[in-house]
Amino acid sequence: MSHTNLRAAIGALVLVNVVLLAGIAAMAVSPSARDAIASPLGLTTESQRNDVEARLDELESAVGNTFGIDDLSSRVDDLESRLDDLAAGSGDIAAESVDDVSARVDELEAELFNATSEFESRVDDVETRVDDLCSNLFLELDVFC
Image 1 (cartoon, helix red, strand yellow):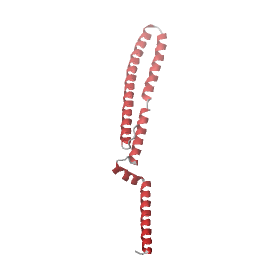
Image 2 (cartoon, one colour):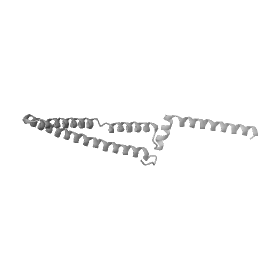
Image 3 (cartoon, one colour):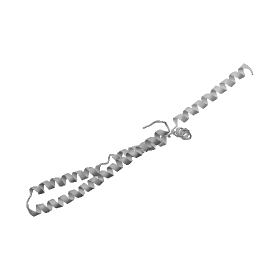
């Protein structure tokens, strides 16, 4: 092989390597190409990561919703105020009103207990789901939450 042919062969190999490297770089930049590479390797894809982030945001917003408990608490405060007003009154009418309000306070306490129990259950569920998501997300990467 002559010196000129050897230079041409080396130049062709360099050109092929440059084209291959440019193709690999373009694939690494493309999200769909990264997902296509990550899936067979058992790694978390970008679309899975976005899904996990959306689910975590949804869980965080669900935990922050305490409107029911706040509403019940304000209703109990209102009834306590009314009880104080009625206790200051006199006679049978006041006693009957106190009994009615007392029964309603008992009902509200039961509702508050149920709402609190439900809220605690939701928090436990969210914590379990977050732990599951963390273990599923990071198990593949050998990272622990």
